[in-house]
Image: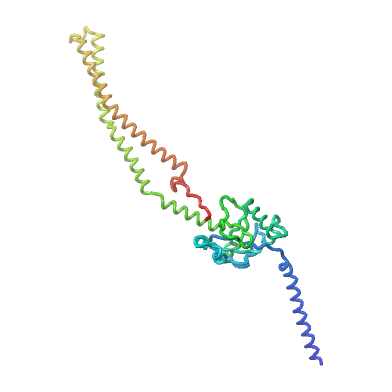
Length: 319
């Protein structure tokens, strides 16, 4: 008799435990079952590695929803896409989400059409975007709601009518980083380092040749010779004029003046002959100096531009 009573007690305990567990599950899931959510979708033009069904959707770190499905646009909207559009949009990953309606107070309305209209206006006004983010170094991804410059990240023009509310996406931080690195390497590939070095070498060679063409030593010797002759003639004239009685030679002023005129004429011809050559040489030196000054000035003021050239063109989101 006691054995049957024990079996009865054990059975009652097991049944009671099961009933309590079921009640707890129902109570805990009641909020999720009755939660008012908005079905949304977005299209991402990059790898979604680490994102899975059930991944959270956060807004400034606060969870506001979860990922429901992950697929390709070409799989969901096959009939709506023409062949050319199919090739264009087939690379986009389509992610659908269930978002708490309370997270979008401006979109709360009685009908989905009203919610759709309000959210579309909000997206256009605030630059609301969805982007892929990662939790630390674990590689676990989630979707983050953020606000960006709408002109920098314009929405993707759609060739179909979305089945859910559409929220545009923006590139993730990792995608922006890799794109910037790729742009830098493309600029480096276009820089002609050999040509730049040859241009600088040619500039220095031109400057050195211009200095050599001046022939300073030859000009100096000729000028010294002319000045010496002029000095001797001047001394002779002064001696004849100031102290003619001490001069053994008779004063021959006409001949002396003629000699002086001849000497001055020689100096004048020398200067005229060398004037054009000197002007050309000095002009070349001035141009070479200005080029070197501009080059060194640009390198000092804009070192990055001196290395990388013009800044890389701004990338645009695929339209």
